[in-house]
Length: 118
Image (spheres, rainbow, N blue to C red):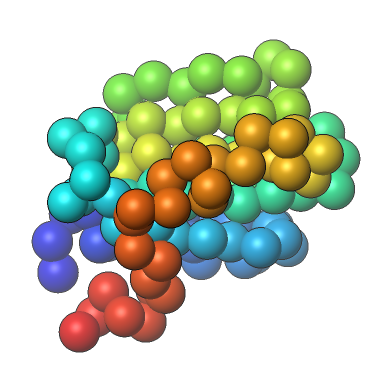
């Protein structure tokens, strides 16, 4: 399995473990050079957003993947974690609706973690 797909699968598992809501994986590799995948997930409150972010960071760190940067951790409303080929967006539910990344990146293809194995 390639690096990006492994990051996506590990991150999604960590998000599920922290009860993330509406986890969406967008394959944007044919749309932009920014990344191959976006993962978008939301939590009900700041505490859950923090737990989700920490869970992803811990899971990917244990697997040897280092993030290039993280933004928004202090406010816990929209946390962006950049792992190079994969960018993870963790929102509180209200801000996710407002920014609507799925609409902005609608040219990307929605995929599931299971489809990444194919």
